[in-house]
Structure formats: C-alpha cells, structure tokens
Length: 246
Image (tube, rainbow, N blue to C red; front, side, top):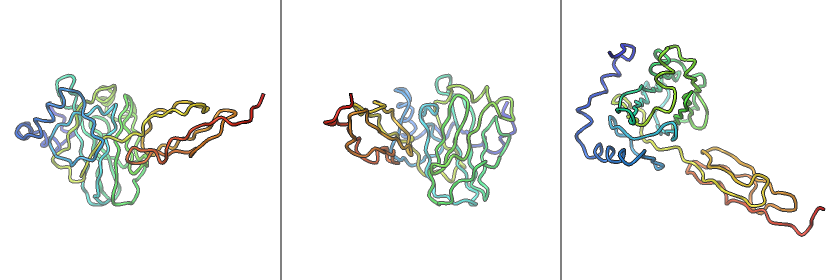
C-alpha cells in the first residue's frame, strides 16, 4: 500500500494525465533510444516523465521564486529499466527557512543544513550517487544527504545504487521554471605539461596548467569552467625553451 507519510503529494500521480499529448509521446519515443541529455534550458512541463539517468547526469533547475514564497520544487523519480515504477521524490520548500524532503528517508520536511544564497534568480543542482543525494544552489552546497543516515530504514534499499532512469515535475511544483543537464567543460590535453590530460569538468571548476621542465606556458595557466560549459579562455600550450638543464 501507499505510505501515508506522503499525504497530498500522491494526488499528483494520475496516469490519465500522462497519456494524451504529443510531448509525452515524443519523450516516450526518446526513452526507447536511451537517456535524454538536455544541455539547453527547457521549459518545465508538469506531469511528464522525462528519461533521465540522475546518477550519470546531474539535474539543474532554474527558478526565480523568492525565499519565503512557500513555493516548492517537486521532482518525482522513477526506475525505467525495471518497470517504470515510482521510487520517490525530492522536494525543496522555499519557506523563510528553506527546507527539503526526501521520501523514504527524511520523514517530512527538514531545514537545509546550509541556507541558499539570497539572489532571486537561482540555479539548483540535484546530483545523486549510489550513496548520497547532493543539492547545490548557485554553486553553494546546501545538502549532502547520505542515505545510510536516513531516519527511515527504507532509505538505502529505495535510493541506494544506480536506480533512477526517469524524472517528473509534480503538479504542485510552482517554483521550477526551466531545467537542463548540468553543463560540463570538455576534456583537453596539453602536451609537455606536468599533468598531460584533463577530464571533463562541471561548471565552477578551476584548473591549473603547469609545464614540464624546459618548457614555458603560452596562454593562461588557470582555466575556469563557465556556466555555459565553456572554459574561460583557450587551452594554453607548453612550448620548449632554448635553454636546457642537463
């Protein structure tokens, strides 16, 4: 049966609302070909299942809802690989003290341990690993929730592992305006550098490039991954000098 813990949020699951328009049909077709990765901002449409491997692709949500508005970000999670069954939800409540609720784990709303920045325009990022759910707001980590610390014994069995394949924005979600996959800056190689290769990096990452002995750096030695998924400047080069140390 359905656990009464979730109260009115279960009214959002109405299969008849999810079967009638073309967007739903297109998203279903996309799911047959693999997980959808949307790196451009897409307007939120409620009660539409979206193929999304949350363990592999952090979800970003843009909102201009103000703190204290009482509005909520509501994201439902499903396991497509098994039978499309509902796993749980994550809610961020924009009360005067911002709260969160992770179904099967937190037993109702709890205050975020770190309150988000005061800017009106916010980008929330939800990241899930096999052992934790992490929420950031405008690059500030506000929650790092270990499933093993959940007050509900179902937390690890439900959320642990690589389980999430679809998301859905709930009908009562009044805060989420747009969503996308968290952009990444591409991997790159700098020949004759001390590190050699750099992997793809999430936004906000700053990396430093240093050259091996007998080489000088041409270009910027510090690169930052910007919000649009591009590095802050061109990748530098390490060029051999005319002097050698024997």
